[in-house]
Image 1 (cartoon, helix red, strand yellow):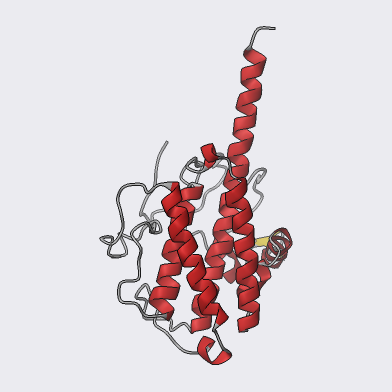
Image 2 (image 1 turned 60 degrees about the horizontal axis):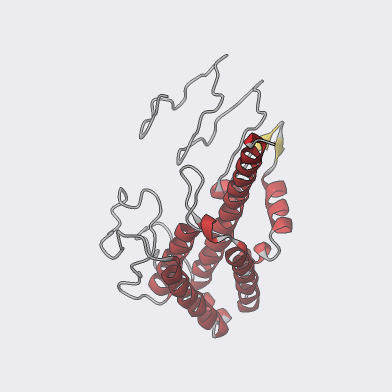
Length: 259
């Protein structure tokens, strides 16, 4: 299988009467791609940036439809856009309840299991520790070194010049991950309990060093909520796939046994 990585040689290409069946495109720019007369059975698109643009299917922008359906599937998700302290508090309660259910119902053998090229439940919780540290402790509270060592950086962080020295190389235990995660969740709860409209309107710097955006405190909280809902969706998607694979494997094993 040919791999194209870090290249722009396909930019502006015309692909005619060719097969891309089974191809995988990850962390790449496909904005403005035009597809006409194509077979799309089983086409699977996953983009958290989907909601910042348009996606036309047969002339219909499906982004608002996808957004509305995700709000239906994940009650409380719509509050990730809340502008008031009350709305953000309610949204935080909703997403934490959804996460608690997912963690509690995941079998121990699936906590570290993962779908190809995706994070496990344990790794996702570590990344959410990082997200809280970046946007609450770093962005809002302006702690100089905000990161806990169990946090898990996003893909490509090293190439962006992010300092990786605060983070552990070895895998922490699931119990340790849960403990640090609970501490970070409580930090957000405590912060939101005292949040006011005036505080949410205060300006902050981008914790990742970008100089093109000056988020407000409210923006930083909304990023935390977006991270929580997006990664909950990823984890539930992957856990369902892993459980289905396990069930099929069990059925296959039983069918191979002599009667």
